[in-house]
Image (cartoon, rainbow, N blue to C red; front, side, top):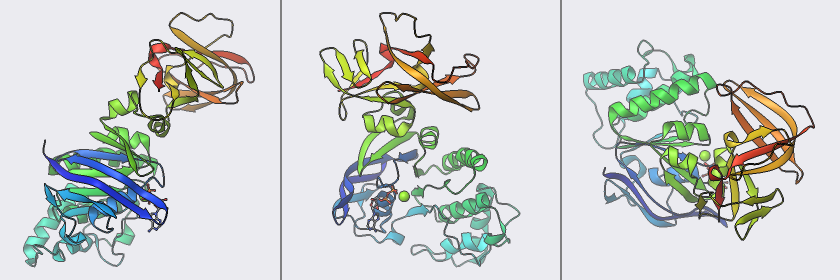
Length: 358
Ligand code: ADP
Ligand code: MG
């Protein structure tokens, strides 16, 4: 697969704040790429540098193998979909979409019939047929999102940047738009770079997931790798499905406020500071008296509360160190257990299912 975008040594600071702290990155052609990071990690700044709305302090951006550092934003052939949609409120759906075509710097269309045909194709593609003449104030949030997408896609960009495009939609619509965005991209064969603060969105949508941590790429991999082998404790934290323990290595044991965990058999990862991680769904809850097998590790915790969410129940236990451990049980595996408040339980996992960062 050829690369559509290459960033080399990109830095961007605002005063003392390093918003982008050396980004080296390549993004393949014809792929769905998600960019996951917490608020303030530099996601929007990165998109703005790629689009040309912002000049980096250092480094270079190349599109299709050519440096575009001196190319103005509207001449880059890169589309941008903003979180707030940024539509013209007084124009109809069709006029909003046509605007991009009529006003593009390179190859602007003036032939009315050609414009109508291209706009019609886009309206079909994003599922807005029948709403062409509606004002954009008279359509729903999800429909406005589609107009914003169509207005960008109609100019045939090679790369489309989407800044938290589903953030303004309610949960039902968000789930449906995930599938639609993927299928629209597939039909066009271009690359989408989709910024999100939601780990589930990033993992569900990206052929490749990039994780941004304080202006640096902490990991770039397929969703499965990110989920099962996060490259650093920071990545595990953003995924919202790992219990992370702080501590140090003492011989073959990991030792911290939560206790002493033998690490023989635990996959060892080399990124970041020393930490120990166990996924929420890898922990079993047992009576406190039950013995550990030789390949198991356990801690004791007092039950706090459970939370039901569709197919799973998440239970929270307080360790003596004060740390709260989360346990996720999929209801298809087991009926929900009723734990007694304040009661102590054994929280047990297999060593080879824990990750050691060292
Ligand atoms: P994200 O999109 O991941 O939430 P941003 O890229 O918007 O993060 O911001 C990264 C950091 O840069 C934040 O600390 C933000 O406050 C800062 N920042 C962004 N734009 C500016 C600006 N124009 N002036 C000063 N600081 C900025
Ligand atoms: Mg942002």
